[in-house]
Amino acid sequence: MVALAVAALFTHIIERSIIQLLVLIFILVILYYSLDGLNKSQNSTYLILAVLGIGSFVAANYHQFFWMSKVEEQWKEAQRLCHAGFMNEGLEMLNDLSESMGNHVPYLTFYAYQLIKNEDYKEAVDVLCKAIYQQPSNRLYELLGQSYLALQDTENAEHAFKRAVFMVPNRFGTRKSLFLYYAQTERWHDALEEGQGILRLPIKIPSPEVDKIRTSVTTELEKIEQRL
Image (cartoon, rainbow, N blue to C red; front, side, top):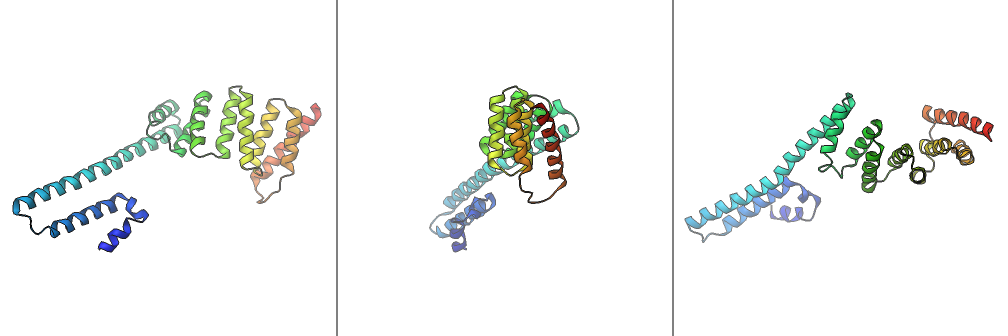
């Protein structure tokens, strides 16, 4: 048992609260039986201190557990409200969770989606920047680019779309977002070059989605070529 307790100290197992509690109890029991010279009064004092120590440990760890359970319930309720169409109520609850879940990327991503749907692009930019700081991804940069574009901040929009492409240069959907940005801002030569680049991308896994993107880009390219 002693060997197992010592071994636990050097593994990830010790990071679990229940294991820490068991090790603490084990150490206290060993100490209790090793102190044979204690009188009855001292034994009682030791037991009281041991109980207080264990109680404090449980309170500190499981208070956080129950608090996180409450936060998780609020997070699920916010998602349910948004999916059900109660956007204002859902966004209000998501905003209330920002302090406790501000480092949780799925929460930040979902919050940003809802803000964009609600056309609150300025707030969406702030939320997306926090998510990107925690865990950058091409999809987050795409959403950031769309939000900047809606705010008519074309410089930051282009930067975001290019960052998305840089992360996954052979992803059809990401390249299409940059292509559409150039088309929407009437940068026809850049759009033409990007669109032709998309059609030259290798198709690693054929799919209806890729076919749809290629068809859409081909149609847009024909319109652009007529403009030039």
